[in-house]
Length: 159
Image (cartoon, rainbow, N blue to C red; front, side, top):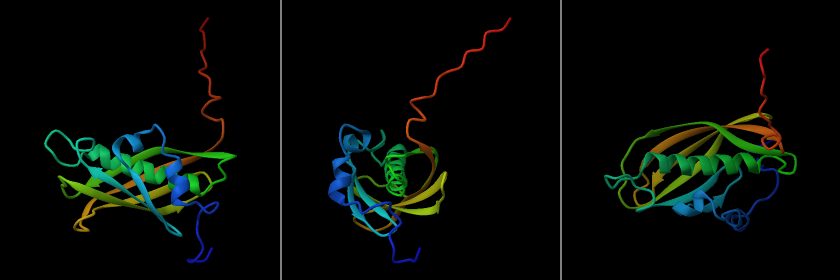
């Protein structure tokens, strides 16, 4: 694939992605999709009463929610959603700079887009200054549809 080709399974629009925002955590904390590039997804998140910790600065968990949202949606955008689903299996974040108000912007790019495992990095910056606030990596498993819902707990009864 050349650098000018999109990595997405099909052409997704911001309007389509915003339509996915119904009754989930991203909606609750105000995440808004802003831009779909050929190999990135961008979103904003407010720094307000929903996303700050008790001391009035952006909560690290909120940064992780932004990263998980962007990474999971990005991974999902690379697969056939009728056959597969993307599920986060590990996330880490480095919190670099405190933000007390305004908005942060997350830009998610792929580090690895494999058939079964993907790794996505989200760089989070303060909208007003452009300064880096956090950087996060999300590892995503690509599994067949129905895999999670068909799992049954096996009980082994001893003699």
